[in-house]
Length: 210
Length: 210
DNA sequence: CTAGAATGGATAGCAGCACTTTCTACTATC
DNA sequence: GATAGTAGAAAGTGCTGCTATCCATTCTAG
Image: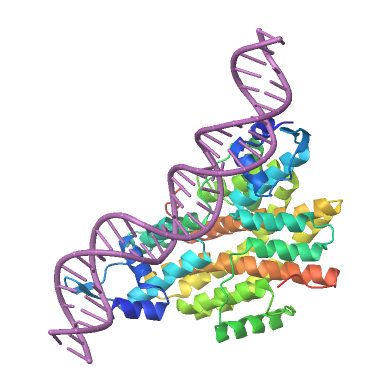
């Protein structure tokens, strides 16, 4: 298909597709002549994946490029790709030097029996959250971590099962992307629904605004 | 204290504080003369809260203003404030007309025994996620929702307990903000840690990049 | 008491980002 | 052979979250 059809079927404007091509988010089409190229179903698929990451995941163009790089690297193990993808989804580094927050995270990991180097981005992200919590006077917030961990454990198993259910390695890697990006968005929505439901039963008056 | 001290103690540059004052994220200081104002500990607290929402939560200035509006409204019930806050945290509306996604969400809510109008933002957010999942060829993604719900239920209880533990209504409302904004960030980090751990045990080779 | 720094308030400017527009030189199609 | 579509490059746009500059006034150190 040509770029106009790619645009029509994806709902993405032609100039935006050209922009993505320039930025390396989409591989170039197959040139049939100096100014004519053909695009495949793969392009359409990839384009939709890019839009999902940008719109739903709120990823920057640079982050999307990084994720796609991990996705296309034939050397990369599933385990490593997961790390790259989660790192890209997380908010950009805000390294904290809060000693107490560090200790809280270390103690938490110990309690959970999770081994994780302090250099890992997820470790840093958690320290950043706890440091911020302390700054706004919510030291108690750290007490909620174990609850999060209990919730996260079965989710991680479901994530992995979902990923491994995809046959090929490519499908599995894409499952990681979808599971992470859509998973985070879905979890936020479901969490809001659950809170809404619970707080509604305790205080059954008018519902929150649409 | 004066603006310089507010800046020093919060780590936020003076021009940025002035910007927040202009944008209505911070109440004006108490004017002691036409060009002198005094700021209180409350200002410092509020400023830190704003930074937490902007930096960790990734909220826009407009969204922060909306959240603070809900927080300052003495009429607003806790239940309603929760709705406003969750809506502000969520990614901006991307209303979908995907019928199948709609049905999937309805069926999900029925299974969970959750009553929720289709006009609610959380409902819409979930429809948007499922519609996107289907677009990228992951119809199976909807099967993960019940797992999310099982995880979200105890989290919602913990959230509410955390919120109600704060004595005054002001404290409770701030607990909602912290629980939502920091809670989402913490959950994402913990989820990544859990995935990392699980995938590491299944495939014990080099860890993901720092 | 005075020089210099700080303040409130206002306006203007800036950098980054995610596109969009415009252009040229072609090519496919009716 | 007129019309529409295309690749590719470059410049432009609109928005957001700050920064910088300015001024008249006021605090403050010596």
